Length: 152
Image (cartoon, rainbow, N blue to C red; front, top):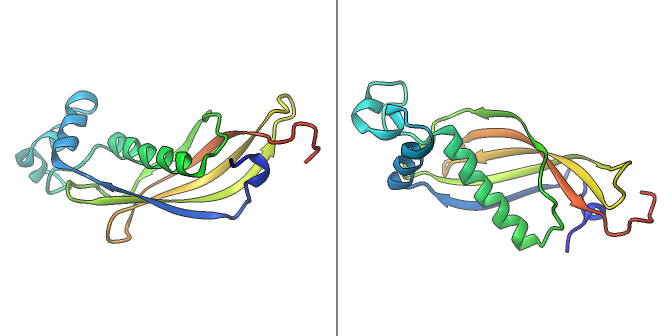
């Protein structure tokens, strides 16, 4: 099990392999972001996207799926997240793309008021199959402390 004490600022992890399907792009957009360029080849062809593209919010959801799968594999003592900062959709994500994730731990901090937990901040980068960064964000994670009585 990975705890607060195991988090190392500067550590980089690369993981995930998410195949983006046309059906999923349209299904997600139909429910949550029904803009024409996420729903129709013809409408998308008339935009700067040039073809059907995934919603940025769908890209976030696919990224979350890869992050959670990685947490399960690591067996992290995670406690959720208070939020994300600076989400940027840098390049379109298209059906047929395969996404992966890179995280870099920026820093960590023990909670002064809750000795059983700490937090850490990460820079998150999402890549397509060509190694192009399609999305970035800054993540804040909450995690259990292994030894609540320890001072560091």
